[in-house]
Image (cartoon, helix red, strand yellow):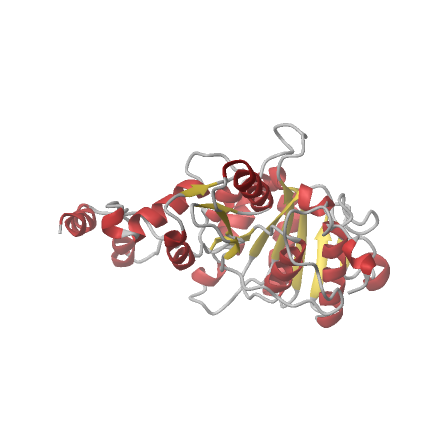
Length: 335
């Protein structure tokens, strides 16, 4: 790989990945505020307008509701839109389109139609205060039908974007602002981007152990995985304890089997998340481990699955907890 590739930051790699995929697939279009003339507020769409023209790279009005809705219609008509929402903090403006429209279209059509659409948005804390420093990953992952990925490395930033662009269902990619500014030389870990012109996908929904450790495993996602690696190195230096790191990569669908597979690697596990703590990813990971480990952690849950509520009353009764289903679940714990 040319040495110059090591100096590319995350935004430049996103732009090169989009360019390669747009060359491969003429149905891909890019939409969002300032994505064309400006090339995106972080530069992640720079150069695309000149290469593909205004028919495929579109500046939109400052109305997330309108352009996400337009992208959904475009996706259902056979195009493959990539929507950039400048900051994840603004995503609430188009929640109806995200949660009630594109996320549920496959379900509401009985599986006959899909909405292949990628939403790229920048999240994470960089000292920009309360309305420009959130991550909101758990809020998005809570909605059935949305895939939510958080790249931790430049290679994942490339490979998960490629996978999202080839996925038949809607995917939200939360790109940490610190990762967009980072280069391969400034990150704590991560394989370098090897091919800018023919990028390969990374499977959505599979976690990755990025560091071995026998005393403690830290589970994280997004840029928190980089910080977890740095913390693991410092802990080993200062205490001599062996600390491993698991990067979730995707929080919806969460790799539950992978978590249970990785749990026995160390007697202790720390779960790290940048999002708000209440009802969040940390709680979900710990619940998966507690319930999956059975007698080692005698705890279960009875909750509605990640599915829209069915129209059929019989199906609804199977989805929504009832006194009968709660008693059945309790009996398993008492057995």
